[in-house]
Image (cartoon, rainbow, N blue to C red):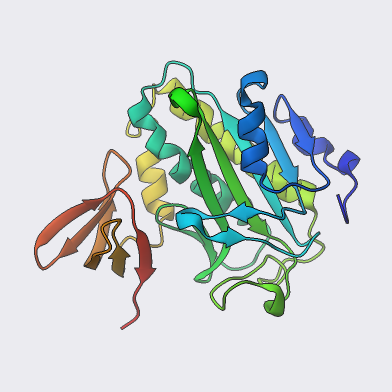
Length: 259
């Protein structure tokens, strides 16, 4: 990698069965998806120079080399019903929020479904993509480490450095994330993919900065839903209370409103 030698990822390598550090990648999700058939559950690819990354809704995610980590994790949850797969993006967002909490003085929250925020600004995005035949999925995470304000894509983005983290060690960030992710993942598998028995729903709801806030949700249909986010249901959907009643939102672009 540009500023960190691959051998410095010793802690992270001890957590998962396979960890490959790429000097450069168009998209770590694409590379991992192409190799998925030959790799085990919880295999990981990481780079600090992703040239063709993407986020939700097809948004582009590109950062200056050496200033961010692009992390993709392969999940092959054998025996888990496909209906449970919708929880994995939320699980990853929760894992990242817990991991980053140790590096910054301010609070770290999750914006539904899986954006990770520091004091309301986005420090990490999560993109989950299914493998063919529902054989598993790849969870991609892009973490802003050291960007300056001028290097960030929007005025509502931040980096760990801007949030007050000092001497950022990419291996420490990656290993903290992988520890949280693998713990939550194994607990979820042990509970058979039940978000209540595993306590995943309650843990996600507790970390979710969206609950209790006034929101605007741009639905896949293009319509806007205005209301108050009041909870998360057993399928991981956001419950929004509006003038017309309660709506369970499975997908949509959420904006936190300030009145």
